Image (cartoon, rainbow, N blue to C red; front, side):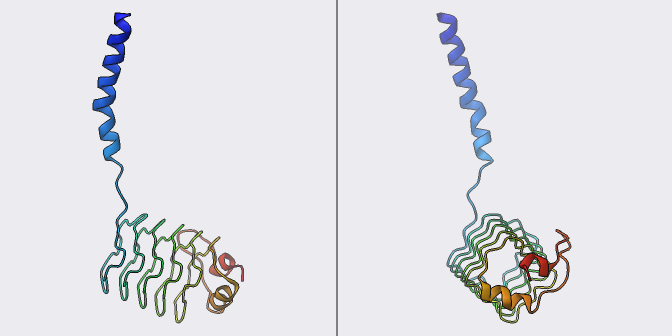
Length: 161
């Protein structure tokens, strides 16, 4: 009986001292909600699951950034540079992307409903399984061209043109 209590005590001590480092690896996502980030440079940064909802991201540089799972809902991204960025599983709904560069961007399974794509460069972008309405697809198909360098998918095929 004593050895069971001793073993339980030792295991408890081990869990107490070993578990915290594992928990230290988990971090909260970055939050830039409601921020004024005009002309900010996020190029090449890892911004997985970052929150940018209702942010002003006009002329912001996200070239090559990892935005997988990011939330950009209801933000202003006019003339933003997203060339080569990865927005897989990102929420880009109700975002004004007027004049933005989405060339060679990966938008797989991204939520893009009510996003504005006026004068947007989508050459070589991958929209595989992205959530778009029929009017958006028609608008994007009119300017779709190229093959995404990371996924090898043709832009027109990814949109179902």
